[in-house]
Length: 277
Image (cartoon, rainbow, N blue to C red; front, side):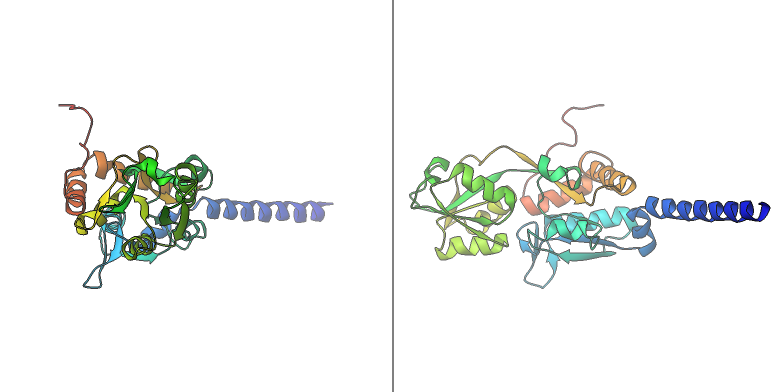
């Protein structure tokens, strides 16, 4: 009897130790992995000016790419300790859900259905959806989009697909993996209008102002773009959210403001909507 009890007790101890190890492993945050690795892996775009693209010198840059470097600076102390994982619009969320990337910064708007499967930080920038058309186009207003003669191009994200159905059900909608491809379709005449994130649309017209214009108004409301990550890792989420807050509203606002002005040619929203002094 004593030996049976000893074996049972030993088994319970081993089981408890095993469970303890499993709990410890389950509780280890990706934040710990990042710190030990001394590098962050971030899902970004390389075909969405001005957020993420390859410039004429072959350097991967853009507002979001440079913001990712600021995140690396805050997390591991060096903006260059970063691996930029290029993804398509469809591939950005799987990159973090599969664990290939630590988090993503890729023009991701916060929507309730996305929040069910992804964790978002607070937004790092506001955005809206604008429509670009050639100068002299018969499309003068957003209402003109809902016409059988209109070919409306955009990326193939679910939000863009839904927006095309909602605001221009009569138009022919064509979709692309990247904003660059959608913009090229407009320039080549394959499409007659292009719906895009406000940053991409304004940047495109700013560099092609003699040929294209942005229609007045936006499709839908003002949106929030945020960093996204695999849910269930509170320490990592808290660190990312806190860092974003410090850049957008806090102690690092000066760096954020300089970055914003570099890419958009204007000052960002004020650090706070009121003066606390």
